[in-house]
Length: 564
Image (cartoon, rainbow, N blue to C red; front, side):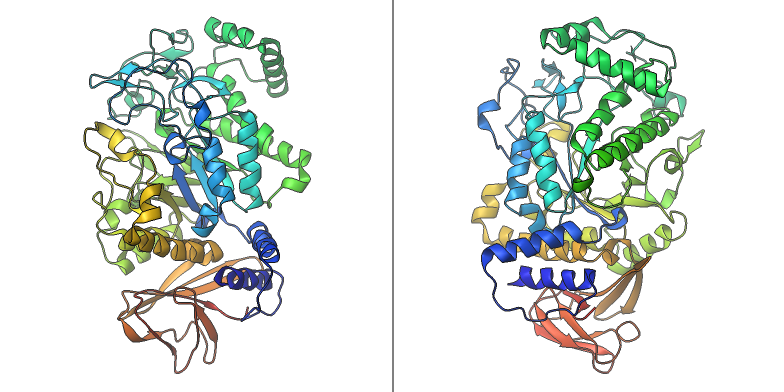
């Protein structure tokens, strides 16, 4: 019933109709149809997106029959091998409504291109390319993750639910060299020196780590395709097709056949073929920034071409989205990243947004200090751009609340801070981030704890809190993209308002509220007599004497207008 109420509310808002306050019962099929319509037509703005980030191999195993490929059977260090998660598993959870119920409107999953076949021994045991960042062939999907048919289904299913898809893309490096994965030719990659991260030069023209060949992305010198890649394509029966497509690409663009342009073609093929909505770009600061302008240009071309070919599948008029991982970039830096001897504005090189590494530190402050800071920066230094906030991630060994002792507070900070939010898989279920026997990043990458969600009441309670906040955020772009204002200090109440053309959205939120009867001050934001609905307690209230009265045991209130 609650979902139907939200659905009817949004529909009435979208079409300028009076909101149905207490809808009568509907047949299940009709309810589903209403919800799907809402999900498709709801206004969406990347500035306030609620993005779910997951490791493809660690989320859900939808096709156990394809768990082992390329003889990847050697034993590995703890959590350093493939565990069975795949594209089909993600689609399964989309179909079940898991993401919709969590208020997710974009999914970013780790790369699914074909990984090196061999394992790398890093001293503590073998590691396979389960994480997707060790590319062997950009033109193929790794069978451990799935196939093209399954990726088509994932994108189509997500779009039917109003969920955007972000592909994680790597232009910076190939996979490591193993006995069965040869190094790419020297006119394609450098194998040293290792990066020192103290200047622009020794951060871009270097290898991230030992045995991770760095693509010569700054080079304009034409190169031939590696013999090993040509032999692979020939064996797979697609050599002629791949060569023909490359010929057409370089003929259309006039680019030299330099390494970065080959990879741009291969990456943007996933837009042309599948209609993905954006890229999360890996290791941005380790590539000459001009390369990103090229990728953005080709991504825009591919996205517009796909939309022209599939007019009935276009979600809205949002342009292609690119968010960059500039490691250690923080929102306080504004538009500039400082290498020490040089500053670069990556927002000028194709990125709408950058991942913000600062919120995990800001999370130690009180709510209003965080919200005011982000509101100010996003409306001054970063006006017209955005950041993607996170508290935990796949390669941040110092996340906020690593022991998962503050799951409710974490949800409040992440989902209510201005900017886009990145929910890392298991944030909403307190998936453990400390795993015995692991080394390095592996401890952050355990399999999704579905069993805990199914069986532990406290995890279910935590999950419900994330769902309520996530749905409120997804239903109200004002939460992430709107302007923040404190309405009352105690109990703490704040407002958010977002205006974009003819679209207007306004909400108020109360946090750390007392149990029982509570008074929330909303004067100056909601007028006298205004009917509001608290989506957290599912209670309708009316503004009287500048405030609303709630009586429940919840410490959170999420207030929206009853009539739009």
